[in-house]
Image 1 (tube, rainbow, N blue to C red):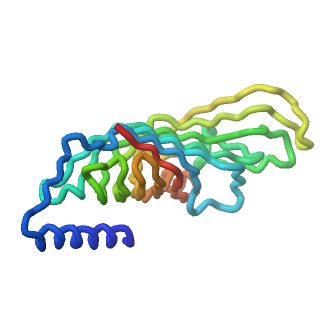
Image 2: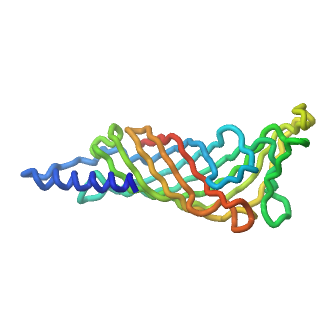
Image 3: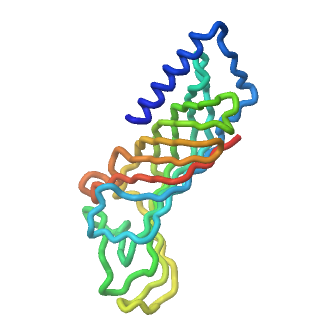
Length: 237
């Protein structure tokens, strides 16, 4: 809401500038950089995660999009961008078994501190996504050197969910078997997701935040967690 208020006030300021002058300023957008290609690298977390689920280190989110930008004719400071791409969230766990393929009513996150466990374990969810952004550029004629604000949504469809576990250890931490185990299943997960997003940038570099409105897991088939990410955004072309 705060960022929306900022964008609204900026719109009023821009309108006042164009109406008080004797001649409306012409902005040439023919060579404007439109941030067609965007990469987001962030840290992912789960709002509502029970304390019984032990996470470890920095969990990672990687998103790659191709987007097209449509400036407003009435005010070129504003634009709407739409696109498509892939989003991947990777949640890392500490001595925890994730029962992604178990035939159980809900997915289990079992603490294995006192028994054999994998040294490294992660849960990956991968989506085809369609982001939509309302953008504001302070200097739209030189977009690659301007301060920019963007609010938007992302619609995603789950294409893969899998676990990857490496190096089986005893409860004392010694290696029992050095191998990698992968398991995949989408049974416990919601097949689509809707996220709200916010981004601030200077030129090609910025920060972004996203929050998933719905839960990661289907109703009663997992903890009622809402993934969120915060990280850096790189855009260009």
